Length: 583
View 1 (cartoon, rainbow, N blue to C red):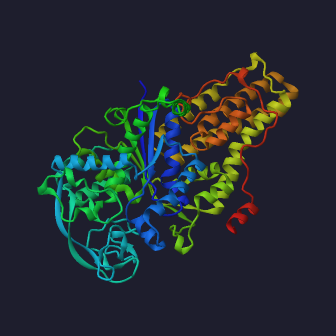
View 2 (spheres, one colour):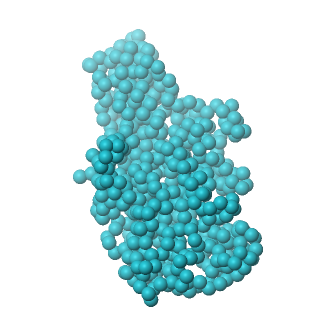
View 3 (tube, rainbow, N blue to C red):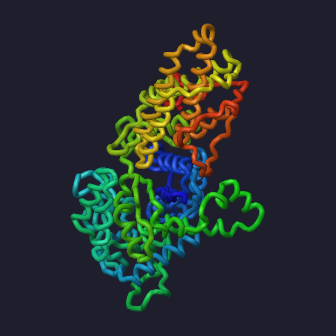
């Protein structure tokens, strides 16, 4: 029986363009892991969608004097275009505005209420006298009480990462009008996290396989204690409270003017998207729908029920996000799931990334520290961007996108090491041996066999825990071994002196080439398939779950070298780098 993997990916807000920090945070690493998992023969369900609610949307809409829906309609297609550009292989990419998501969010709330994990409390909230309305946290800015950084949101400091409680912000003022804000009483629903805390602690304490810093940070928050956390707010954009299904004694005052907090409902999207995916597959009735399902191998190669991924305890759940979302995925989301009391699977591995900065500075469009993900991908090619991000992935500490390092990594490693070995092997075989190797010379060298098996074992072990730079390092070492093998045997001499030994050398070099293509596939899928296509080998299908991520001896009779061999990778020349930076 195939191992099942569920992958939940952070939901991008539709309030602006996406920069390469977002690529490193979730859009590239999730796809590397999904492609690796499918190519390892596992059943995979990867879901996400656009996060269309909450104050990041309303703040931007208010700035531009348009409705939140108009903003969503503008940016949702741009997010999907970027996902297609980078080949992020979602099984379903949806949105938080669907009726399905609304219904399931309300069901999650009602289950928490029924199970005794919802309380209602009156509290003070920021209120703008000038605007005569309550202001959600993101409409309020001030000085962080912990690191003293100015211009921080009322709910979280982007500088030190601390979650801020109401009233902690120093000198709070309206983000839009800059006027001072006061405190006024309002009533909201809260999740009773103290009541859930023991269950959450038992879960998180046992996750010894999490990255050390993630585990340590999570346990640190739990040690401080979890307070009840509000899940509704005074705002008119978002999912409504199901007032008609709530007992009278638990109804809120002025509930019609309140909506669910985006932190509460967005993570529920992982579950609601799974249900939506399941229903779409089950309802594939007509011919067109069946063709789509067949194309993605939905009906033949993957389960068609969300229950297979959420209620089968053998299914492992992976989540991909930036570090500002750590607590939401290691504490609050597990709490919401535990509070359902339906034995739903909890996070197995939260792949939380640290920040990717640009030349040592945090991304900030207003300060001109920005690198547009679409623009850089279209200019240099997405595989080059994916490879570089993989090699510097901010796994345990912040990383830096440095232009000279980007150029050096592509030119020396991707082109000079991997690309050079592939090109010299294939062109030599075609030009010097006419693409032919006799049967008796198709003998696998013992060292090539040993190193090939080892690299798949090492890379598989690294990717299981999302260690992307380590995986890239192993692949580069394997490619260097290929270059050394080629050089030490000197086939350019053997072709004149010992044809048989020359053919044996090329047979083994070609084995390394084909296995390099498989190893590279999760990272640079387009380029990996070009390698295979140049040899007339079938490309690796995105949604196929055939087990190919392992060493297999190539049947040389399948090889037919392309008439037009071109290098798979191209150098980033100085002129091209300058052209982009000046564009």
